Image (cartoon, one colour):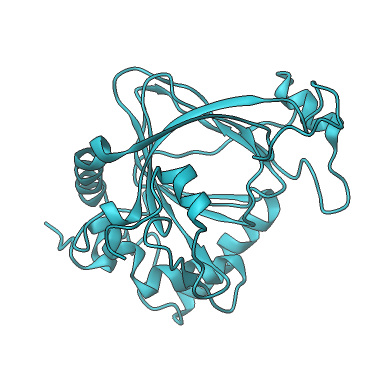
Length: 272
């Protein structure tokens, strides 16, 4: 048995030696992970969480899924309103549909394994090193800091670019079928939106589409601001559950009331 109350104890430290980030093996791991992330914009670390801990995380998450707020919305791939200056089939005006559930951070108890892991400085330091950041901060908004994305039968997240430069996710439970994370790396850049390329992907052209391996217990880092990506529809009775661990470059980041209402269906936190 492992002590799930101790965040380091749930990590496979033989495979991912991050207990001491200054140790040579940790430094080598961080350098390798950074190179892999820089090369493709995506990093998948399977078995990051030990199997027994992954099972405990899944049990916690399943208990919380009845609390999930369902978002069903039309959006462009930029998560902006349709721009009428462009034709309907243009990425800036073409509407897509997404539907998924989300458990907010303030609904996850302080003693939950997932919350203990999120608040472990060792994990945040490891992620900062892989991203090449001198320092990261935990998101200050109690709703947005730590979420569990819930995708049940028929639910999906359509093609989109992230507003944030990077995201950190932990796979908790895979779907019976479907629920795959597909992405097209570097589809646009800071000086080229590549609207033709974006249109081709949304029309079904396979192109340079990749799959991000995401078995339960996998930690993933993803640079989604320039990579178009989606979660395909879930098939079957078993939901796809994934934790989103929000780390940011600046302290005291808080969502606006509008954003809270949009993503969580309320403006007030139960722990404010």
